[in-house]
Length: 179
Length: 350
Image (cartoon, rainbow over all chains, first blue to last red; front, side):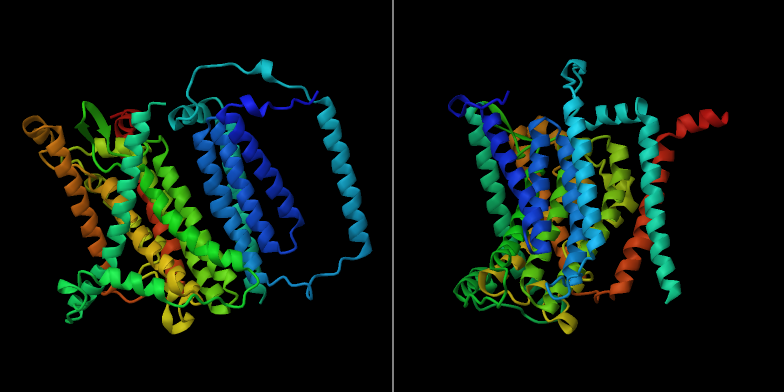
């Protein structure tokens, strides 16, 4: 059943959520549909900002700020760098062979199947949440949880990032020696 | 919510906004006066007594100039660039504690627009957004020199953000808090962080020069190679916004330096003043002391600008990635060892 919000009696948070969600969805679509790659990157940045707003609505201050620092502040800036320097015009757009297009369609259909199956089989897990009464906005609590309960996955994630970083350095070095 | 709180906070926000604007305005005059002083000239002295009205005259000139637009397909982004630069330069001031508290109208007023837990992270988030103003403006100008300037400025800011973040970690390990109010409260009297974390202070200072695009890190707008960098195509008040944003962010980063490392509004004998002269007088002196520290750092920025020539681009990247980042990681390790020295000695059997 689709729940239709009652706008006349909506609370401030509901109104804020609706506005944010609307902007998120619109900018996400615009990021895909806009012709200019830089415009779509900028739409994606706006989309990230509204997602940070959603985190704030969920009282996750730390997550919201880190999301802005990492995604808007670092990753999207590097995206913009490459896009600005690559000079993507219609004239030098690469013509993709037919087999690639076919591959894209097939993989899209496969992803659709996976997503449909996931959505059919997923159940809400609201019953499993436990209210611990701890303030997860504060970094002290977050740090305790990350380094006590989730120590091993946390360290594995950092090793994964380190490996990726070393790999990138290695790739860029290799190119230099070949020249 | 209590309506008095809203009024109180609005007054503080308006006051901070006005002060930032006035400080940025008069920084332009101070810059020219200090440059003149260092080069044995007189400097602007025609508008008002000793050139005191020069910023107003400059502002009038910028407003009255012709609004020129380059032939660019991105008119909207061309306007958005300076707007982002200006608003990010002003947003950081929201979390800065300007004083401890004032006791007025029977209630304690905390002199800070908002005391959020993650104030330090908030500042870094705003800093990282600040790059967009330059990147978008430079790209939308549809000019190769502007784009080069924007890319230089952007890559410089992104790479120095890393060293800046790492240098601040050592400080945060010591303070145990990201809230600027708490960090200020901990530096009571003369327990200023600069005495405990000199290396962290040095790295942070260098990085804040790079973040504000000031000499010796102003390659983004070096005239001899790039004409004017990312604001080559800008004229009139849009150009004024970029310049103003630079001075405003200089003011804000001086404030952050003063709050993080030089005790903020604390001065030796503040607790004595609170006891003998009352909270209000002690805190008004505190605000004055904070502004004296800020003015010193602004003077320092200008002093460096007219003393040191700018770096070459490879020197800049070398300094950022190969010197400052390893140094700040070393600083983190030393701080960790010093904090855990008792446990370490016990572990080693002493």
